[in-house]
Length: 383
Image (cartoon, rainbow, N blue to C red; front, side, top):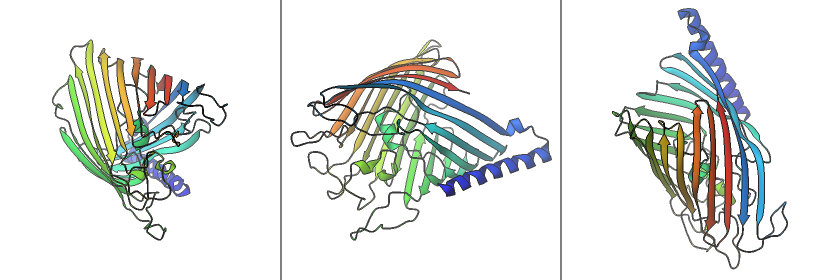
């Protein structure tokens, strides 16, 4: 962390020094080369959990139903973008994040509401404008899944697959297609038969390729993307909570998504999103599901939305699932949950460009009759 803080400080120093030199030589206005913005995202959340049998959960009495609610500062942050030259840019994002509620399973994807955290979310230098060949180095999000959604709440796939390591990446973008590759030294090294880490080297790789077949259109768009990650343990999904110990080998993850926006008139359009991702099968000594079977872990997400006034207002439904895990942690002698799914609807409005207001209601259950319900409201300001 100290090394990254030092790196980030040096990055800012280089960016601002380069900007200063450019100003002296070209008499450029500082405001044209450096842009500062931010965001504040506040979310009241109401959560209900109904286990199939009475259970005891920390901070709750033994019961067959639980209810909790809270108001969280989901995330707030500052963005700094510097572009001293057309072919050079720098980006830094500092974020304070509390993350979503999850009172029952103690799964704290995207952060822990009990203890918010201030962190460097991104900090990188990029050579190339991004419209042709480019090279990037620093801390940034690898192209595994995407933050693009018609609602406002990250789905199960996004929560578990995002990863933002300190990496080096390269790629090429064209109007109709592109690709990129990324490499870094992952934190979750596999172990040898002796129980020692196999290595501490740059050995984690991510690749993506995308196609934009309707890029010539102004009213319709389609993004088809496929991706590959050589080590699933490097994602935000906190894989360690399921495992008996370090993996004996890296577990590959592959997936893809399609996102389409079709504006039929100025008044109404249709949005479609679908994504699937899966790991390879785990070795039995590394991980088995609650039924004791060898398995992979897979994710599904689907969204369908009506887009009013060119997407200013969105109304739709969504479905998501995760297979191969005991999501609630309810496995027992007579309970073997191996999948979790949820579905519901959302409403999101950007009547003011900088202000987003929304509500989302989701019903979830596993295959052993444990269920939950979540109602989340969002108020987000971008500036």
